[in-house]
Image 1 (tube, rainbow, N blue to C red):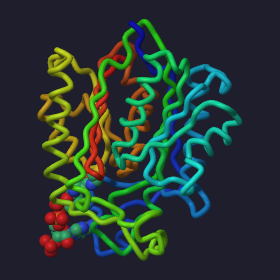
Image 2: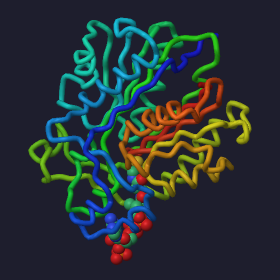
Image 3: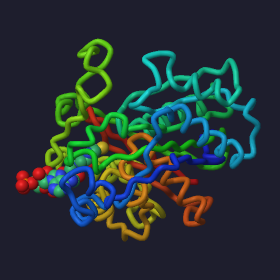
Image 4: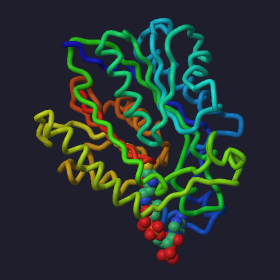
Length: 322
Ligand code: COA
C-alpha cells in the first residue's frame, strides 16, 4: 500500500506584529478580554504590498529545504486560501512562478479556515493514486486585509501567515484518513459578502466587511469539531489515548480546549499557536505543525490528528503518522 507522507515543512510570518495592547489604542477592547475569550495575545500583519503569494513562496522555500528536495521535483501545487492575490490567475500559479518552477498543475482551493485540510486531502489523493510523486501543499492567508479595524468583535481575532508541506509517496504509513464536510445553510454566520458575481462594486476597502455571529459559530464549531475528531478515530479503530498530537485550526483557545476535552487529551498534547498567530485561516494548521516539528515535540512515527472548521461552514480532519 502506498501512503502519502510528509517529507518537510516550513512557515512564514510577516514581520509586523500587532499586540492586544496595540489594539486597545484602535478599538474599545482590552488585552484581558481578548486573552480570556480567544487566547490571542498578538498576531502578525502583512504590509500593504505583501500578498498571499509572497507569504506562500517563503513558506514553500523553507519546506523545500526542510524536505531536502529540489524545487524541480515538485509536480503538483495545491494551495488553500480565502484571500487570493487576484481573481485570476489562481494564487498557486503565482507561487509556482515565484519558486521558478514551470509546467506542473497548480491550483487553489477555497474553503475558508478549512482550506488547508481540503488542500492536504486533495493532494493526498494525487500522491496515493500515483499522479504525484512530490506535492507542495500550502495554506496562505492575509486575512487582516479583509478586516474592519473599527469592528472590535472581529478585528481582534485574525492574523496573517503561510505554512507549507512537502508530500511524497511512501510504503511507510503517512496520511491514514481524511474526512471533509460542509453545510452551506450556515453561510451567513461567518462570511465576507462580496465577490466577483455578487457585490463586486463593494469588494475591497471597508465597504463590505467580514461578518460573524461569534456565539453561533462557537457552538457549531465545538460540536462539529468534536464529532469529526471522534468519528475519524473510531472509523480507524484508534483509541483516544493512542493519539500523540492534536494539531487544530487555531481560531479560539476555548474551541480547541473543548475538542481536546472531547478527545480526553491533556492540553500538553495539543500544538497551540493561537496566542502568537491569532486565527490565520488556512495557514494555521501547517504553521502549527511546523512549530511542533521544529521545536522537537512532533517526532517521526507519532500519530497526529489535524482538524479544522471554517466559513460555509466547512470542516475536516486528517489523521496521519508523521
Ligand atoms: N473587546 C471587548 N468587548 C468585546 C469585544 C472586544 N474585542 N468584542 C465583543 N465584545 C463585547 C460584546 O459587545 C458584548 O458586549 P455586551 O454584553 O455589552 O453586548 C460582550 O463582549 C460579549 O460578546 P459575545 O459576542 O457574547 O462574546 P463571546 O464570549 O461569544 O466571545 C468571540 C466572542 C468572537 C470571541 C467568540 O464568540 C468566538 O470566538 N466565536 C467563534 C469565532 C471563530 O472562531 N470564528 C472563526 C471560526 S473559523
